[in-house]
Image 1: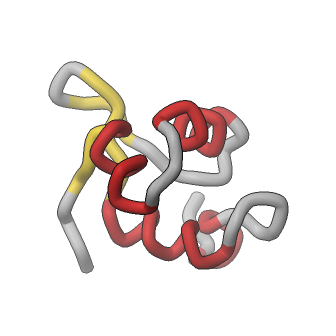
Image 2: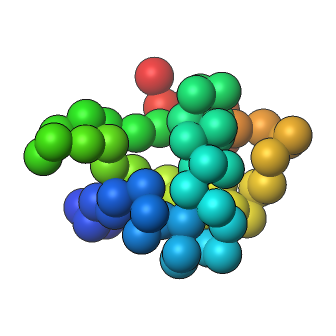
Image 3: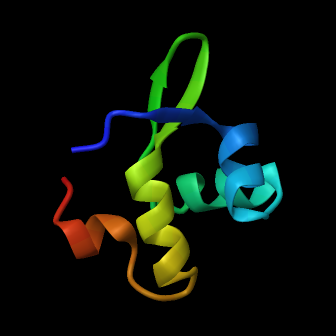
Length: 67
């Protein structure tokens, strides 16, 4: 499993959305995130999977059965 974690700003650049969009997805509990290293981090594999699902549809947590 991928263990690469991204800062919100880097995640946003990677999929060409604003950092606010990433924060919104996290707040809506559609995109799992972790708090460490002085900020919020997103697992790269979750981000790429969610980016293919797109907002308004099932969250990545539902797809991968993440608690």
